[in-house]
Length: 335
Image (cartoon, helix red, strand yellow):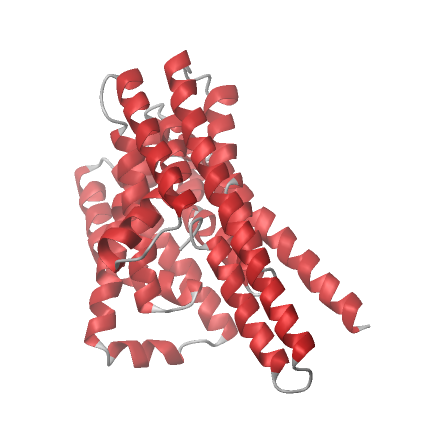
């Protein structure tokens, strides 16, 4: 029975993981539906309605104790403000990129995000890389150079998305809040500036929310659901499947985004752009293969230790070490 329950939990976790990354991957199909609203208006609505959605969710599950604790910690509040600023940049650039016809370049940002995360770990946290990780970073840099030649300029959209999201992940690790709680705190900081901007648009008569159709207003309001629902699914997946599995699933999002750009929006992919993307994919194969190899080796060491020392707390040790192994596998993918 316990085995069946465990399999059921893993199956539920995988389904939630596919749902989360699938929604993030297909979101380029959603932002164009919000026209004629401009990117900044869409961004402001996303901030306002996201707070409304996550606050309602937290009220429903009665999880508010963290808020009082957070208010007594100025350093964590400061980090939340940094996270809110960085994710505002990320959201704004992504919405603009999709609606301006740069879906493929935006997808590249999330393909190279693991490489940027590793580079930031070396530069900021003084982490040491294994040889394969160095090779992956080198191939990633070569890809950026090839794409720079192909585009005629550095892929600024991709780099902005990758660096902003990697910075966001780094700050979130230091804040150490749950997904819904963290998003609530971040959107609470974003709320007043966003609401002020929307009020200013309304006063000028330029708000599409008030001058458009009820259907358009409903779509703008649904930005809160579009933002928070994948996060809820991700949270359900994170507690049920290993981080290494989540790390692999995360590639679904940029793959779907890339396919949307090429197949649905018919964006151009000249040979040099294919070459650049090919190098990025090679770097990710190196990175993922190395992470899985390390995770398998660590699991083998844990199992060997459990066999040698049965009944001496090896079960607890195995759980900790296995978690470390899974984390090591997922770390280059999603920190």
